Image (cartoon, rainbow, N blue to C red; front, side, top):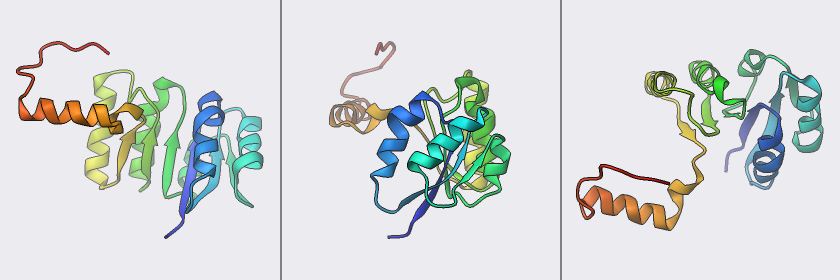
Length: 153
């Protein structure tokens, strides 16, 4: 298995509480770059989870120029779209935390950038791969539930 170099943009609560511990356990994953506007948080993340010589920076554009194959965008919501578009245009695959963007225009820019660059983009909606969610998706696609005009989650 090839090793994936992962860059983390946003080293706050969701990074330390969920993403970093989970990524650290994965085979073939190397946490090689950390960015946060508070440099001490990026340094702490690198020290606790990073590989030897991991990049630490405060400007995410510096991280995009580095080695990561995949970028995890874990910033405040208003930064999801611009950071993701920049990462895709820098040739990186992106996993962006939810919500995708703060408005449909931002989400559209993200999708267009992924299509234009041929890079993979995924949003951290964990429920999509659950068996019950997959079953409901198949039912909807098959028309088993009729026309869906309202949903609540």
